[in-house]
Length: 232
Length: 279
Image 1 (cartoon, chains in turn yellow, blue):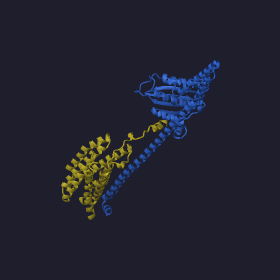
Image 2 (tube, each protein chain N blue to C red):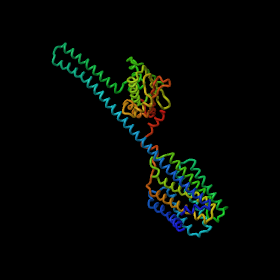
Image 3 (cartoon, each protein chain N blue to C red):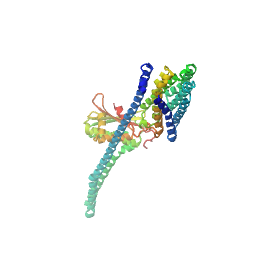
Image 4 (cartoon, chains in turn cyan, red):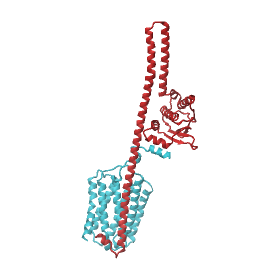
């Protein structure tokens, strides 16, 4: 029990790391998309602490979870929207927002709130964000840049989001079928993934800024190789 | 400790949760590792291409420098071996005039000196023509190529013919000179190595591109041979063709005819629209 509490507190406190490092390296992090993540980290930190103030079985927790799920999904969607190239998937991201809000609203009104956790909206959120993250990586593979991918802040942020969402995906689904007491016993998964997420976001805020060099501006041309292709 | 708790056999949820979470994490880490390694592989490939390109550029530059040096040596040899002795002989005849006061001998030596100076003028003209054919400068690529082919046919060693289907507008003089040099180099190669009995050149326009095709019935090379020679240290003339065409952003393609009887060389050159034609 003690270890679990230490882990939960550590996870909560680790939220301060990305906030501090973002502010220390504010010059290199002064980009719209990074501000989106900063707002998320700040809200997440505040929500975690506010939640810890409420009693264990308080009904308000459900509304807090729901509110935070909406904020989290919106901010992650905005971040991914800003990083994914214009196309179909961008429209899907935008279109998914009202649908997601409707799902959350529906569960707020119709669901039994005794469980104090919005399991279904959180699972839907995880699923959608995982799909968008995978799409982001697919785009990265399709349109390779000259510099290494891990020198980009965006890469570390997407990795943080993806690791967090994948690790908690089954936990959120399972939360629908287990009692509050049982859920608490599994909650260390959320603490670990939260801790990992904060560490990865801190790395993203620390590493120097990186501007990718598009392939068409490479210092060499493929003319000779085009010629080679035409010969076959 | 967590593992023991989560593997509670009484709860089926705990097993699903355990394997589900581990599976999802494994998939995520696998995806990230795959992307990183794939990107590293792509970057290594790009760098290898870049290195190859640089080597190729270096080879082309060396070839063009060597060719320039050879050209200079040829001109120097022409001037030294032909024009030099001729002018020295003319000087001897004129010197004799100063020594010998006999009128008839003087006239004879002046006449001889004049003959020699005429020969020297002709020689220098030939050298200058080989540097910049006057027909090309004054009448354009079509006439210069016609001239070249007539000379080859006139020698009787080979039947050479050419046909320009659509060359109403002349290209820029610099472009014409480069194309002419490429044709000269190709024809020289055919004369030297192919043992062909005929060469035929055809010119055509396709959109904004000019196409020139040479046919011959001798021994030739295909695109693979051309690329191999281009990457090796031999084939100076071919490298020179490649570097000249690169200047025009043109391309060259060597192939064997469908009938397997003839060899074809096709040159593709984009037309420079903004450049005015030669005056």
